[in-house]
Amino acid sequence: MQKLKIAILSYRSAKFGGGQGIYVADISSALSQIGHKVDVISGPPYPDLSNKVNLIKLPGLNLFKTFSFNYRLKQLFKKNSKSFIDYYEFLSVLLGGFPEPKTFGYRANEYLNNNNNYDIIIDNQSLSYGMIEIQSRLPFIEIIHHPITIDYKYELQTSKKIKYRISRHRWYSFLNMQKKVAPKIRTIITPSKNSKKEIIKEFKCKENRIHVINNGLDTNQFRPIITNERDKFRLITTASADVPLKGLDFILQAIHTLKKEYPKIFLVVIGPLKRNGHTSRLIKKLNLNDNVVFKTNLTRKEIRKLYSKSSIAIVSSLYEGFGYPVIEAMSCGVPLIASNVSSIPELASKYATLVEPGSAEAISNSVKDIISNYDKYNEVALIGREYIIDNFNWIKISNEYENIIYKTIENFRNANI
Image (cartoon, rainbow, N blue to C red; front, side, top):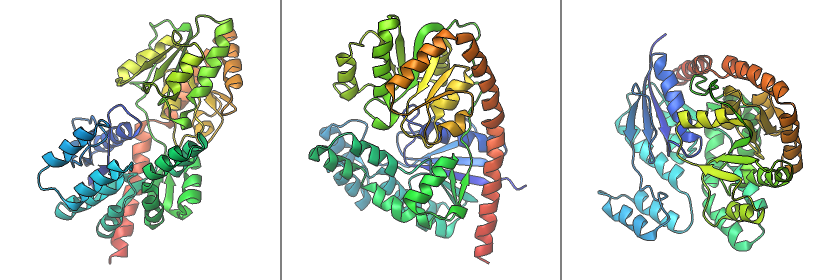
């Protein structure tokens, strides 16, 4: 088949924070490895890409590097040839909004208007107005990991304070745009059946336009380190502190309970701790300062080492469109406790201990059971790794992407004959 020139758009692609940068790096590498020429067109922060993939920087103002007003003002004034979009971005952030998906869409549309030599464009969940114009000129696929409307709903449930709810409403104001754009997209890829169901419900998209292709994992990077001896009382989780959707509170409450029986119990959290935030206060309240540590900005090699030293992994999310931590832990052969919710059962199959979401008691009881019967659960975990290798390898997944890409190009050509 013809090898293609592919542009992957990403409004922000942080190397370590969240899954977007990881996804962009992985999918661009996978498509390049099967022979396609791939450019990633990204706003800041920029991804860490394979040397076969070309990075095209499409800078916005990068106003979320810090929350300093002086920094943000300098970012605006130091940019040459400022446009209306730059001023809009600055004012929107100043008023508590998150304009990056929208402003990136306009910049990407302008760039591709002047650089239209691509066979297909793949956008990573900006769902911005600019994508509608790009779709009218070029074969186009939108990636929707899950509707962000769900994040918004969970955040509103955490507090009834008027000030907080107004701030959340302002931050998530970009959802009005995404709800208008999503139903107009002709080809959508999402990583789980559960996400497909939620996209239809939340964004009113047509079912026949949505294709489910799992995200992949490099199972050579995420594999057990046999020489490492696991610490019996060391647990590991991945969670952004103070993000309610990740359910970290329930793990901390479980650790508080387990500490009475297992004084050496210890939790490693891959993710940042917000200073003086909700999670920090909860750790202090539960007297867990010596039982919890947060690790940030880790390479995959460093994450693998942490998994290999831990005896149990926990994913306590209240919702996951696609839970990378689920397949990462399983690929490293670590016994896994995970919430029985959204896409998680779909990913873990029968190779994890699934518990009621939002239940600290269920987590603590499962930890006790695994510690008491570790050989049994370790054997299940090793079989689970083989399951991940068979179902989430990038060779299988990149071929599935390729089939949708060729079909999208063919449909575009037929529509324009």
